[in-house]
Length: 298
Image 1 (cartoon, rainbow, N blue to C red):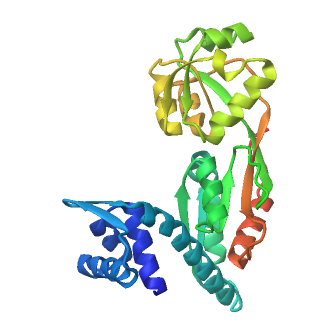
Image 2: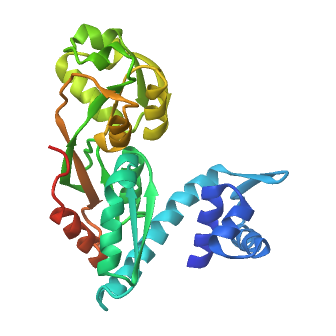
C-alpha cells in the first residue's frame, strides 16, 4: 500500500465520485479507478458500493477513510517539518475557518502573508466551527479560525481579535425605530438563524441564555446555511437575525438593514491548532500576523 493509493482513495471517498476525484488530483479517470481496484484486490475488501454511475462507501470504506486521513495527515506533517528546515521559502499552508472569519477577516491577512512570503500558497477552506475543530483535530488543517466556543483537550485555542455581534432587521420592521427591547420582545419575534454548529448561532444563543431567554422559547422560522442567506432573508422582511457587523456592514450603510437596540457581549475570534502536533513555521508566522492586527470592533 502506498501513500498515493491512500491519497486517491481519500479523494474518491470524500467526493463520492471517480471523475471529480480524478479532476481534483489531475489524474485520468482510468488511473483513479485502477488504483482503487488494486487497493481492494490487494486486501480482498470492498471499499465502495457501485450502483450505476454512482458510488458510496461501504462500512469498511468508512472505517478505512478515517485511518487514511490520519496517515496522510502524518505524512503531510513530516513533509512540512522537512520543508521548515529550509525556512519560509516555499510551501503550502492549509487553513480552515468558519464562514464569518474566512469571508470577512482573513482575506487581508492572507494577502499580507503572501506579500511577506511569496513562495507560499494558502489553501483556505470554509466550514462551521464544529467542522473546523474536526479538521484541526484530524490533521487535515494545520491551523483553524473559529468564533464559536471550543472545549477540546487536544486543541490549543488562542483569541486573536474580537467583535460585538449585532441584531438586524429590515428598515420597515418595528425594531428599526430603536426602542429598547425586552426579553418578551425577543420571545415574540420571528428569527432567522444559522445552522447548528455555526459559531454565530452558538454565540448568540449563549448571549440570550445569559439574558434569561433559552433556545426553546424562541420562534425560529428559518435556519439557513450561510451568513449571506440570513442577511438577505432579513432584508426581505423574514424577521430578525444576529450577525457579525462585518457581514452586514455594507447593508447597514446602504439602509437595507437596521440595527435593533440590543447590546450583545463581545465574542472572540480564535486561532486553533493541535496541542501535540508540530506547528509549521508558516502556521506560526501566520499566527504572528494575526496577533499584530488590532481588534476591528469596539
